Length: 116
Image (cartoon, rainbow, N blue to C red; front, top):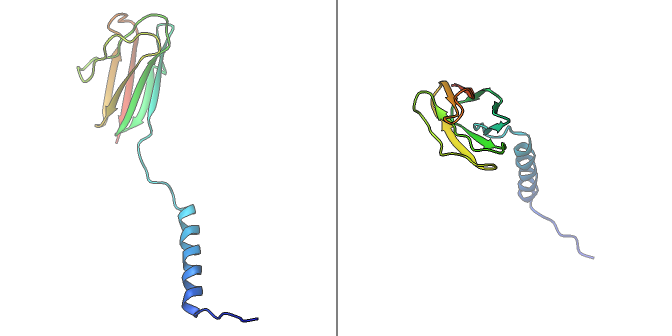
């Protein structure tokens, strides 16, 4: 029976690879803005106030039985009429407060607060 001898450098390379793989498992994931959702149902926006980080895309989902819109009070965004199960998305790039309402039902209001 023959015994193979590997150079010491080969063993170190395998150990180094194992260390790198293990280290990658414990590194934090890259930081990215999480997406957020606002549900439209029963003539309300839920949640009515949402705080997110800059760079976040907010999605409004209409789960109500009638159409609604999502309109910025400042003219920053404006959806078409959303039927049941339709959605509208907007990416908030700059910090600030963004009040919004339903054009068809102006008493329906909400606000997105964007932090740096």
